[in-house]
Image (cartoon, rainbow, N blue to C red; front, side):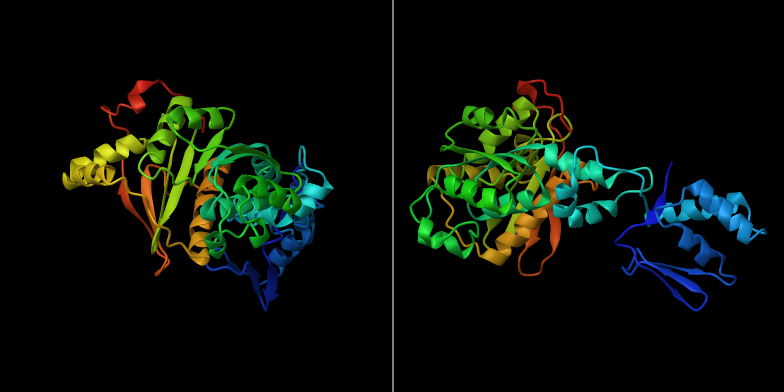
Length: 369
């Protein structure tokens, strides 16, 4: 039996003959209540009473109100996502997890109604298997976010050692760890921050698409923030995720801007599709890429911590939406740009699956999301 209550994030207060629900623009509402019947209804929505009990008590106190009107009032509050079902309990979460992820649960409740469970969303997070490529500036901050959200199953890959110049943005590490492997330090730090996270690590330099496939084959989703070798890594990762049908979120820092995108093989176009689309719209792009290949371009780092944090947050929010469905990722099949100077986020290109794409057509994939 459903036992509705107001979500813990939704304040309810009374001003004269008005009911004020919520405090956030676009979410808050004001209801007129000349005879006090709505205030009484709200007092009964406490998580202890069933809907049937609430209807019965309101009708007893206000005989002029019908059961249908009470039902409609509750449904209206539900449609505004003010209510949750207090009778719903988690499947696998214990008291420890409920307390550790309490604020997560409050956030997830913002996207649920009486028929949904915020616990299911958190448990989906806890069970999801992620392959992370890169634990440098962007990757280390993303890893922290993932651990805080409660992603318990992560396999991370990197090959680099820590350098003094890393510490302006790589917050996971300390100067005492200079010359040590980032991937090993990441495991030590994350195990202390959230001991529930099963973080498997791989110390390896990616040299081909097969290396990526070996790393991601047991995962459900892939996050790529690896940036070396600059001109090849995205192609190798793209080939691997398309062949194995793994949804991907990827991004990187470009001086005063960050860029990120996401793809779902079989549903969206891939990175190669994007190249076809961009080249078709601008013939100069192909010449630029060829010239960059000839000079063996390697991007010099101009990332600072607050900018990396903004991009990491945007990418993890995109990833969270992709995994849980609480929001539709804005970057699906789109190259999104985050301007670090204005804080604006906008698409700079978007693409569909291309019939002539050699990667998409090299294998038949089934989307996993």
